[in-house]
Image 1 (tube, helix red, strand yellow):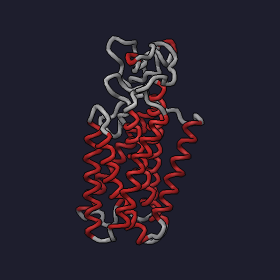
Image 2: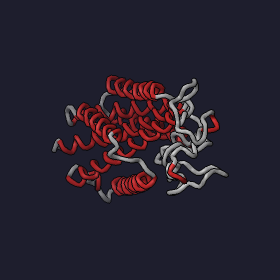
Image 3: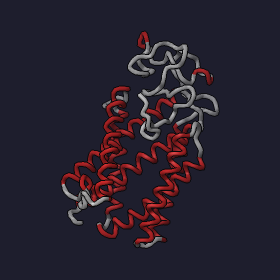
Length: 293
């Protein structure tokens, strides 16, 4: 199942050969694929009968092997690119925090940085190949945005950013543990249900934002500081954890099927967007639970 939204679809390893995970499209002339394009639902129960990277040097019909030649993505590549991308976010956030005092000017700069980051993310999402410059640029502007809003939250709720960082790490670690333990299986049905919930959530939040802007819900509506706002925040974090499982699955499949090395940038890009989502929601949740407006 592939979402029409390029960000929600977590395009990842979905180039001309299709994605090696739950949302790959069947290749023309290939074997029939069940469960709406799930390449793991193959005739005869062979999950490797349709290897989307077979024409890149892997033998079709054989169990996938770890990359043995240069040019194939490895876990080291993913870790290195993710460290570079997340490191850029952190550097941007620290500089913004240190150099921009809390004011209406810095708030405007934060909004502008967020818009630039969004545009860069959209451009990368629609590109057929990974662009390190776009991804690093997105991380830099996202970092500025996070630095400014983190400083603002810290000024009102002392220690909130630190608690949000710890919360983000806890959610990420717990999700990885649950995924590696096999308690969550990323299947086509799982992705379809999760993406539907995520898209519906964003649509409702967009409507809620419009209501707030036009004064219909001056207290924040669904994003208020009361119990309803806390419930919405927890749901948003759960959606972020869902996206993490998709990221983990794409990385695992990309390595298994020998995705090109450049795809590690897309893995880093997806992980960064997901972690930023979780951090922002965690920051809001910490503020709500602090019990002060």
